[in-house]
Length: 208
Image (cartoon, rainbow, N blue to C red; front, side):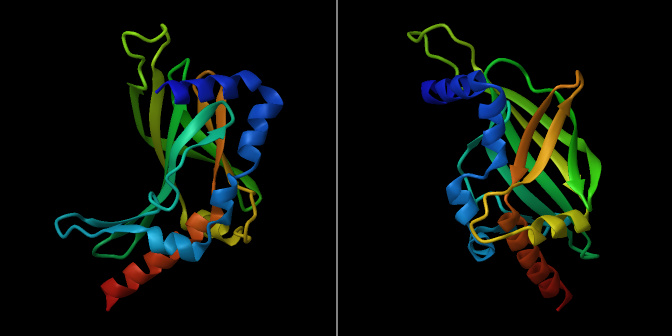
């Protein structure tokens, strides 16, 4: 769409200080989101023929936002609860949109427990969208990418523990590409707190 291409171009043209500000703070609406509201919006997929019950915050906040070097369209957490053991795999799903290059990311870094940690990207999907029509000015399509990586239990608990009502401080993460470039984004602690609550309910139900 023309609007999204224009927003992306304007945001990336700002560079340095402008792009940094975009990831230093969560959008105001997302910052106002409480764990209780996240709980109400969480989706639980309980398919009997699947080995995991999927608990997702995808619908907790369905609006995109500008981050450093890109536009984040869909950022959410998922928990895969093993149907037999109750063990949980925690995943971050993150979509990026950029107008001028394919974002080939190979890893993610973040801080946890006061230390710099790294995670491998488990899923990387790429596609083109928002292409101009035949009667529009000649511009390229936007490049979309979806990345999935996993974090340990204690990291999710740390993210949730950082929740403060209406705080705009995100839990920051940084995607790294094979050439040393990076795109920095973040998660809302309220999403982690709400997800943990629903996962605890799901695990308790299965044990009952």
